[in-house]
Length: 303
Image 1 (cartoon, rainbow, N blue to C red):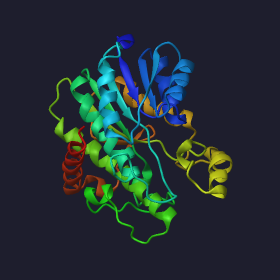
Image 2 (spheres, one colour):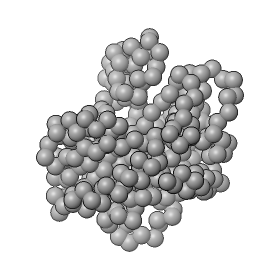
Image 3 (cartoon, rainbow, N blue to C red):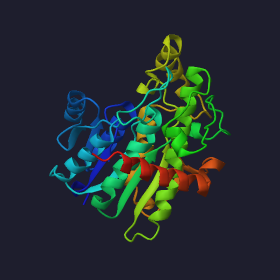
Image 4 (cartoon, rainbow, N blue to C red):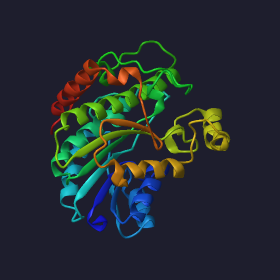
């Protein structure tokens, strides 16, 4: 029964995560949302209602991720049936690092979620669903205005060297590359769990461009103003992959709730449409490098 199911949504205080939580709550589920600040996430959960719980989670610390996963087990909530890896960041003001010494975009957008899913999979009730929120910016064939990903090795993403590129452009490229990592991880995890019965499905989701959200908080002045006030008007333009958070949240909630998707796994959705992701995202060698390196990195940081 739906009132005996729980979904975890990282980044649940922001526009997409919060609205996705509200949509899933409307279907009768319990929801756990996360955020970096304990007071902010508790307040967001309070606004969502009695079936919502807000827990602090610092995705910039793998130790925090492990402690959080343990806390879910002790939460007293109904069984966890779905994980939505939604939180993400983009840094365009220079290279920054997590508490564990990894480049922050790679560390937060990919590595912390990789660890979180690894920690929670043994505790996930079946049938279960895992959704990674990606982005069409991972595909250089899409007219997003963002630089193409640059994936050489996962180790180089974790410990990048300054290549002399313009700071903002380099930051945007790290973001698009992290979104490629999300799609690679989706497909690799789906392959590894392909024989699950009942299944744990794993899919990737592109919410489209959602101007006005917190993703642009690190943009310089004029770009930040355009992101907040000018681009949101373009959600009304037909044919563009630009959406309001509410519309994208409804499509994301569908990947958790829709019975028709109970056995759909290893797929990429742009809104409500299943589409093909970038050519590079189907590269098995890249997927193996990312998976094996990620395992090595999370084991390296075990306190």
